[in-house]
Length: 577
DNA sequence: CCGAGCTGCGCG
DNA sequence: AAAGCGCGCAGCTCGG
Image (spheres, chains in turn purple, red, brown):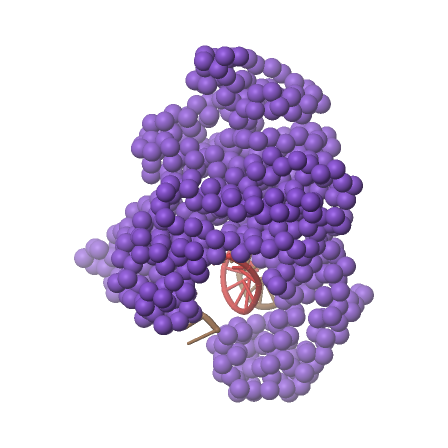
């Protein structure tokens, strides 16, 4: 291969299903099909592994969710893919795409994220193919959609950014499948011991554990009602009113404002009750198998581009339980999160050099204090969060105007996003993901309010909905761009980890055939990554994690002078200090 | 009996 | 303390 003739370069291999077979079309660098093969389900994995090693193509498939788990189970990892389902959703709505009519017409690709099917040894199992909610699985459908997407990108107002975005989104889809395949190392014994210590021993037959029972008894005593119901909000509210605690809700913050002997045990009861129902023994039995927690991640599951999760509550693991995250023997964890990701992203995308100055090389909130904008770190934090979320009242609302004076560029960016949203417009992230258009109900409300016979109630509702939407679009640009930064971080790190030498070990086969001897990402949560690695590679992994964060910043924001510092530790457990 | 909607709370 | 954004889940209530 000379590399001079684009026909010699394998750029993409598009996969589709036909009955129980896999059909693969090889495309050259200009998108011409130059070969097509049909493979039986049994042969497909080995063929894909071979082409991956020889050509390193970008694999184009309907979605990683339906293709990649089977490959991973068969021991095959791919470096790059193009996830048609996820990219369709981005390009269809992106304001950078100038001609989206054909994409919008291809409604068969408008399918939401679906949970990954259980990994099965039978690769490309027919039952999985029959998934009713998935995107089209045939090769012709994939080729046609891929052509539409390539045309949409090359004809867009900024092909470079969109190419970054769809590559990052697709890499995220690979990572999500790999996260589930490898799992988060979880020590059920540590979890069980923690539950027993906090709640009391597990009761057979579903009875309440002892400590919870004692708290419930104390609460009922203080309420003077041995039959009081603590788990029904309306009933508990009435019980509280009877003893003179005139709360409007039973939420913790409101209860805490009252002085009464029932308050302390009630709040404690709610805390323990929550632990039991959300992450108690039932959760442990259901979600932790063979030393791994394998949640279902849904890339692109949130409108802003953040991931969602389904089942297991992966994105809501209480900090309290992080002590149960334990590396395998001979392995360790590299735990890293980005300090103040969203305000840093805001500084970079608005090119606000003063905010970047406050952030560079230090805690961003302390930097704001040193600039004299506000007096304390906690004020700086409240002000920044208020600016990004659109706070109008309280301490946050009072502090935001000071930021507006000190950081006019950053504030103008979020203020503009809010104004556009209030007016019914669409806003777009740094790389080109656009917010959804307003619903018909929203538009009706706005137009009704401008009519001559509009009632006061019409106007009030329209104004409130407009402001609600403004806060959403205000936050969308920042949260969405932060999600893009995080995807770039993940994607770059994934590549660096794959380049590290495997360490022969018999310690972690539970991580599956691909990752049993190699460092791998084991957890991802918006701005945090946990890598599970053989101890011998921990320092190299830590370097990779830092290096990929720096790369992500450059990839998105070029040479804009801003860093993305990490809080990073190497430890057997993931708990915070 | 099932499902939608509400409340409260975990995470970023 | 919440407030101002984005989520998922458990448990309850209530209507069909």
